[in-house]
Image 1 (cartoon, rainbow, N blue to C red):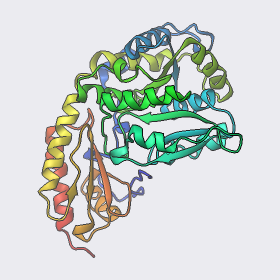
Image 2: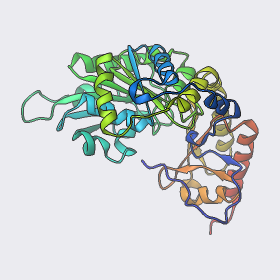
Image 3: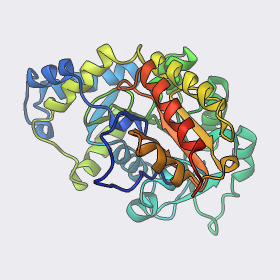
Image 4: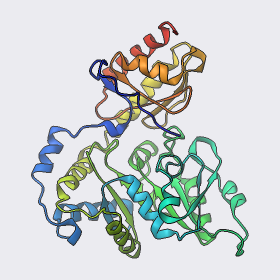
Length: 358
């Protein structure tokens, strides 16, 4: 599944409401001030006090012994796979997982691992589905090494794995001798929506990470957490992939600011997403999925407009959404979109639907 922007057009008006992704957030003035005041050192040598403080904070938040700062969430996923897997190993994940659809074939290209896609509603799969996918342990079959889950599930509509289901799936993986990994790009959205501590959601994960560039509002960075042995191995891959940094405290300070100021307010994004979904559902021809967090998916097929056409019409009025299929679109609320912005975006999309189809 590809989240495609409308192609750049110099004739387009200025952006008014950007619902393309929560990655579009800009650091606030207060966050930038925190960045400018950060104590700095050489992160690669372990001498950056701000990075070290962030790693200590994240390890405690996610209930793991150790943590490592990385430039991106995709690098967190790929380094985790490189540590957990060997060439020819098989990873079990949902068929629409980010590591399957949006990381350039990284598991195969980098680790030589293959991903067996599992089916399930809203980006999640049952323990019974995992059991059915288990292979007989014989030399003719690939070694099933890792079970990966995504919290929240992006392609699943920003859905939240219930704690009981998550625990059942991850414990089954451990019982079968596999490691477990959580793509926690929007983990704090899940924790806020479910009212469950992030450490509880990550309890049975051998590796887990949080992205700070989405709803958390930072311009760069993700933190990967796990055991001390895991992070020690991850550092070697970080070095190999060019992920080691220098005065990274400049960015880590933004992440620390986000932890202090931008977690509880995620509930506002979820409320805005519900309001957006409610407004779009009243537009004739739009079929809207009820959001659990900050992602709103809707289908335009009954309007006679393709997703790309509807997105282009909205963008001509200063509203940006992403397309995820021929008739499926996604709108993402975040800290730069307030209630007034939701109202305006709803009106613009409704007007686009009413426009001539030609």
